[in-house]
Image (cartoon, rainbow, N blue to C red; front, side):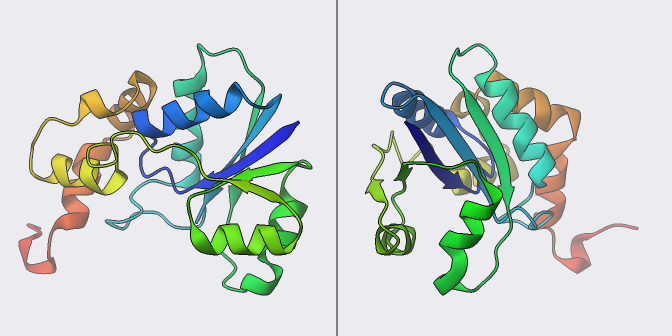
Length: 172
């Protein structure tokens, strides 16, 4: 059985890793969709699809289960979105999502949708991690080492801090 899970992964964190590991115990293969793949360089979506793919691959390197990482751009057309996702991904049997709209859309097309268990949602949150980066608070313990490596490689910490600046804060 093959499962699909879609997230923005901005960034991929330990909560995401726990969910993926749990799903891997229930299915044979996992399709990890990079949602909003076209978005980057904003405070809510600071990382590119390619950077998020690197984060996931480096984080899952030591685990032995088959997975695919597929970028999925937003199309803003809910009635055909499931068909769009199906066209981009290998076939799948089950969908994991905690998003009510995603659940509704996939169930309308006959898919079983399971809600993944969320882990320590107050800390394991992309919003919380980005906030901690901006405020120079501890955040590295919330993400896998592979993600730390990618963020370091792309100078992601400074990118997030720059994205938080107002135009008048930027020094030329």
